[in-house]
Length: 311
Length: 164
Image (cartoon, rainbow over all chains, first blue to last red):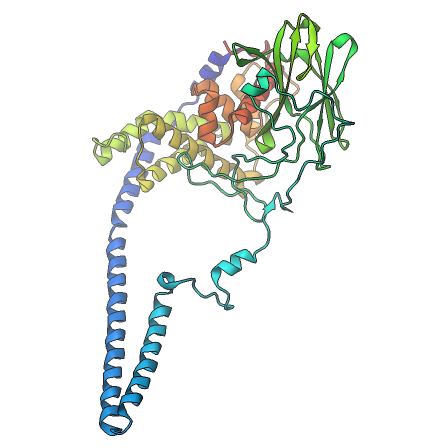
């Protein structure tokens, strides 16, 4: 079977006879409802105008009150009228400004929260972010240990220059679905073709390290370690490429044998039989689809001899 | 909007004629029921009218419709009603051990993510990077899902499955 069989199979799905009629009717109704909603904007404008008018009235009232008091004070207390009028005027104007500030706090500064905190403080004092229901914790790589690492780690081949590897950087930025604070993936009812939601998550995986060279250089054994101590699930995909004209070309996966997957030790070992491989540069990529992350390691074969980066 | 030279009624006819089958068939890969798929398609078209979206070109329009269809289909499948009911035809389908000669039947048995990718790749003819953009995933993820989907089809179909 092939893709044409799939296309034929899908095309057997035929729509109901009245589907177009029903849907067209609904769409027309939606169009009418949408056009009816437009007056809402006029109402909003009217509401804003009313608020502005109310504010103007309040200002006018305050001004009248100030002027009236001043007049009263000036006529009744001739002796100390200048100081008294000035003090009364300042107090009244301050009160008026407070009213003005409260009415326009969104323009004047941070709004007050019910508990008296300003909004920015409330955000800063919030709970930390959660990922999959667990508190977010930065995971960092352990220190580089020359006794356990192979001597070729850290060197760059032409392949690595083309496809750079951050061997000891355990964090990265990924594009993934937005996550709520309770760990649930947000509903994405609205399309996000134009604006793909972006979130950052820690990646708790080591880069691959070549730990062993098999008999007569026939096998490359690569360990993938998970420094978070979490269980690695099986079923991750391994892809094997040969670099041709500077670009990786995917090879048959029959070269790769997943030799060992330990559930808790989190050592994932794959074997590659290099006896069937021609000279050239190769890349093994391991994908972590759940976290949208790919790690990779490279080596080359020259005159039938397996050579690791740096040798 | 694409088709801006059309009147409202003409645009409705244009989108219905152009995209109905595509949307219903894509939704069917989630719902496994024609009635439900048609309901989802109606919702998608109503959303299109209500949102009054502006599209750069027909590809953008198509991608938007696919994305909305996928989202609405996912929501439908997650709904309590669907979780509590099993369609009769699904209950009567063969067990997974039996080899099948109906490729669509086998695709519908696959996990949701593989189904969508297989459908968009083989039926709609999208490339991996395009599917990744539409679904908001990385190309690596889509490549993985497609690879796994193919593998499952090869195992389950009589005579295997080839791209050609």
